[in-house]
Length: 154
Image 1 (cartoon, rainbow, N blue to C red):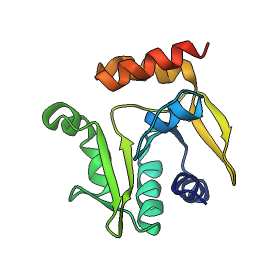
Image 2: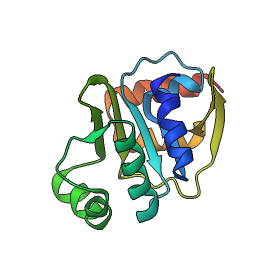
Image 3: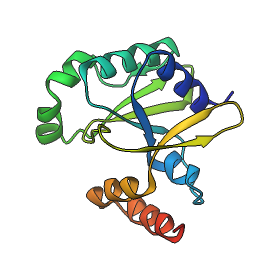
Image 4: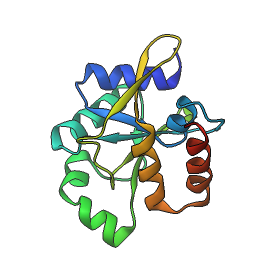
């Protein structure tokens, strides 16, 4: 089972409402894209955030920042505006290749997921149109390239 499948299984078991975004989402939509870390977006609720933290901790992942889910939830706007934090990173200290970012400046509520089949499971991925819109807000060079690749898939 891949790291992505393990993460999704843990989040599903924890009852978290989430979608895969970022490089994995671009690749799962069919564009050629390499990435190391997993990016997810949650339906922004305290319950989903705390359950995500617990599920990730259960996989051996720890927060890179000295904060907990309740603080990220409570101070989200301050972290985004005053600290320019857009993602809360978790990593496995025993395997640095296992990293995940929770995107905190994007709410998955009301967004549609498409289920993509992996060898051992199905993964909820943000739909292509919403993924393009999400990437347009960042303006990062990699996101601009991802948008071009996603638009070619029409």
